[in-house]
Length: 437
Image 1 (cartoon, rainbow, N blue to C red):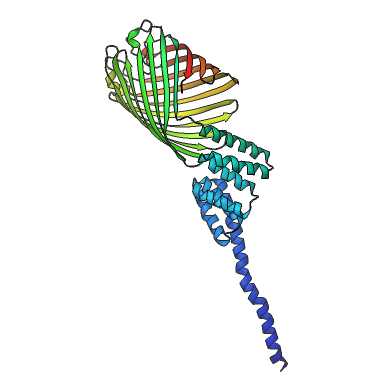
Image 2: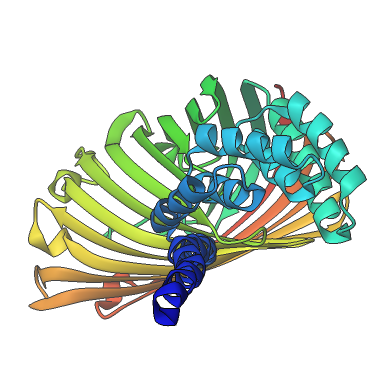
């Protein structure tokens, strides 16, 4: 009988212990999954795998939709992925859940900067400064506010005129392929150069621009080598995020030599930019150029160089006040009508700009250009190989906000396995530049 009466209390005791455990265990498992989803989502963000991060953080939000940590990091993932609308909504939700979250204010401000909402940005960052004790981030905030202000002040039109003179030690050279039978001469020339542009459309992430460049040279003695050059370039730029940007464009270039039509280029290009940090960015570039040349009295077989060229390259930009610069590498694949003018080439160069004092700036550049021509050059039974080096220096003094004076120096040396293509060229110039708009 005792066993019979003990049976019920024992069963009750067993149920009171086992049943709660069977109910609580899944809840603990869910909590563990939630933490794992957030941790793994953060890791994916740091790796740049924002799509994977979004999937993981959405799972965390499903388990705990009101948790500020899950909402905040989901906003980070969407922002880094370029989905600013969803990211903004999540950061605003974070601030509703925790109005003291300085980081949420900062990230929301980054979105306002990218989308050029400068008025809202200033108010937002004032709240951030009140909440944050991070001096480095406060400095970053000041840069973003100032940068947004400058973007907002960007003028829809620009028009600059440069006028000056140059002395050229080897005028008779055509820039890439000199006429080998001609005598080489030096001369001075007056130069006029106009650069202009207009922002036709600017809607948050999209900007449509149109640029026009004009160049005219007037020689003192060699009038037949006066050059007139025109370039028109429409371009569309799309900003995916503060780190990712892309642009596509087209340019029409044509040149008159003397009074004759010398060349016309139609170029299509695409560029993709990645900003790794505030001091580093990388650009991947592709160009397709259709090239048309016309014969003239000086260049009687110029038209055989007509054809097309494909160019691919990469450029690394770096910024470190007061120095900024770029290093680039391009491969050129030129296919001309005649095979001995077609070539495969490569270009490697560096450009540097340094602010010596507030009004005095210096720009220097260097490039190595190698071209291996595809067929034997007539009369030589040998394929031409050119190795060209170019160096330039520009010293600029800012007279005022709209006016500057510059001294320029360029030196070019071409070393070819066919000696008739060897040459040296030195160009010295003095210019005054005025910003009309």
